[in-house]
Image 1 (tube, rainbow, N blue to C red):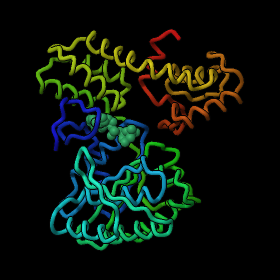
Image 2 (spheres, rainbow, N blue to C red):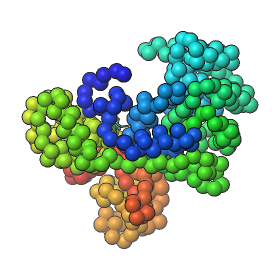
Image 3 (tube, protein in one colour):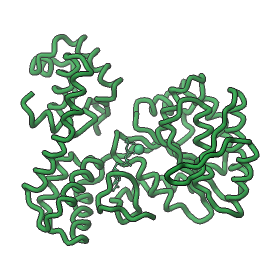
Image 4 (cartoon, protein in one colour):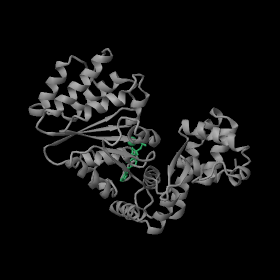
Length: 377
Ligand SMILES: Nc1ncnc2c1ncn2[C@@H]1O[C@H](COP(=O)(O)OP(=O)(O)OP(=O)(O)O)[C@@H](O)[C@H]1O
Ligand SMILES: [Mg+2]
């Protein structure tokens, strides 16, 4: 595995020593794999879903092969097929044995073959008509199903399948994968309401076909110890209290925790004090300011006011409640609800449920929240 340039990655997975905790989640998914069950992995944005998948794929028992594909860039079933075929050969690159068999098989489907200019990785693409596409996807999956080695296919941003123009792609896909025993899936998605819709509504065809796993923030204490350890490994002196402050600022949200620690690391002071991290945090907000001001230009003033108000509330439980509306002068409940729907669609806000099952709304981007809190707008 490639060594990262910093101990706090903000761009991907670099092996277990740069990866904090997730022991229970890892155990849970590996158990599902052993038992032949697929897993539906959901969580809010930037909490560490993709990294967890990479962590698991790196820990697969012998005789098990992992294939990872991200279908966010795909727009239809043909795109899905291209991504699937390319990922299969990328993830099983052996020149002989199993890898060669797969390579020969995919070539027999007559794709166009290109190589990525930067990485040199082979990329295959098909240009086929509707039914033909489905047949080829099925052929690849059946081929994997018939192998001696067990196969794990992790499909990231799986909710994208709902955006395909082909109707009922999810239903078709499920009918295929339900018959499979040797191939186990991990379906991952950050748009939780879509993932829930895909997998839990009885009317939707994935109902009951896999195990749900929702991942949360990393435990505050464990994250603190991990960060202390990483700083001490590079001989930077930082106290538990300073790390606590950074974690609190980042709301224990993985990506933002990594980001602030990464900036403090790059700053390079051998002894990290409160001003160091606070200046770095402020610099991050300054860097993002043009992006945030751009939001303001792109959305209506009602949406902008609602977005700011939600940022200040952190977890917003009663968006149509009198208190919230009058505190921020947001108009009437019907308008607020409409505005909220628009912000949800634009993914500037998401909703989730707390431990008691109460629904709340929250800003997606923590930096935006911190920016609103510290600027007099
Ligand atoms: N357990 C962990 N320990 C340390 N860093 C982590 C951990 N999990 C994730 N990260 C880091 O946090 C960042 C976000 O993680 P990742 O991309 O896996 O999140 P995600 O939930 O897939 O995000 P998205 O919603 O954008 O798909 C990455 O930079 C990754 O390196
Ligand atoms: Mg991801």
